[in-house]
Image (cartoon, rainbow, N blue to C red; front, side, top):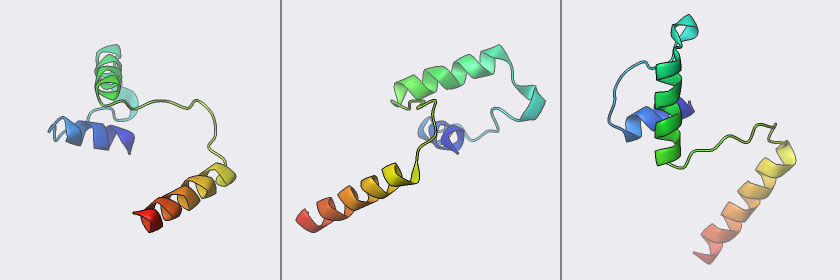
Length: 65
């Protein structure tokens, strides 16, 4: 999903990394795009408690709005 979003932000309507077609060039391209748009890798599981805390903060911000 993140790849789709990043490619859309670049106005690139293409399948970029699919299955075994992954090359270092394509991987490096996606890394460059991710850096440009401030995407990041958490390299760990995002727990349900963290998701709920973000949702709660969003609700509070919307009310304060």
